[in-house]
Image (cartoon, rainbow, N blue to C red; front, top):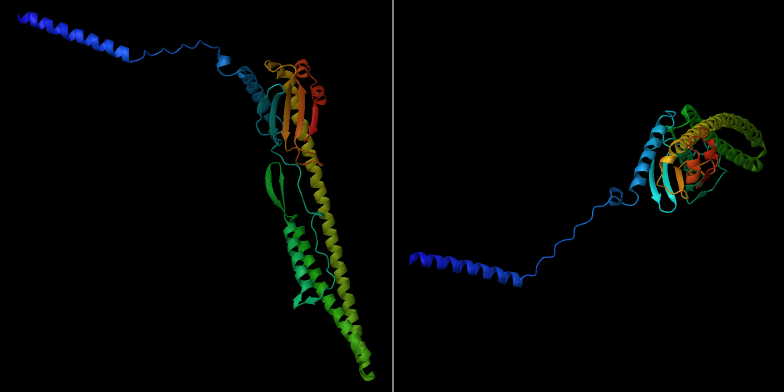
Length: 327
């Protein structure tokens, strides 16, 4: 009897569990299984330009290595690239050498002598103007330039100090000349109105002032001559430095173009995924000419010409045939 009751209890529990499970199944919507994605090739998984990117990475590495093997004094930053669909690939780099600089005209500008000016409301206008021009001269004295990637303050060495000292002396003499001329004018006025017994003394004093004025003007001319000589020497040095920079720039550009032509001719065929009707553009940033010092030097090569250049030891034809310009 007990066995029968226990068996009936288990059957009842099993039936209740089945009914509960069935009830849950009717109240909850069955989950839709997620579709299984079909396997894709690696190139499609990384994008449609994955193979082209790999080829460009290789080409960039070759470019950078080749540029490092040139003249140690001529340095370029590592190339970067981007791809413009239906147009081609664009490489960018820049020279780490700076070949042009700005300097004051002449290269040291000496403050000119100011003509006499009146005193206005107790203010000596001439003195104020001369002080301002002297400060401008001081600001123009130091010229900051860059050469071979190194910054330095170029103050024209000891000549600048000597020119400044001479200009100060010349300015002081100009003041003395102006004071002496004023005394002469006052003396001439006194002579015209002085009694006869005083005219001889005034004439003697006038002669002394005239001799003093002549000596001052002689010293002023001497200072001016020394300044002109030093300024001319500075101009010569500036022109020499300019020519040296031009030669450095030309050598840098020649090395870059030779490397560019050689790499494109020897390894351009590796850009198999670049369409033949597109271009390879190389931009040498901030490498302008004397008339356009801040412009970029740009080269545009047709992919077909690059492919046909393979095996040609003279890559200069590829460079000369490129669409090259400054912008």
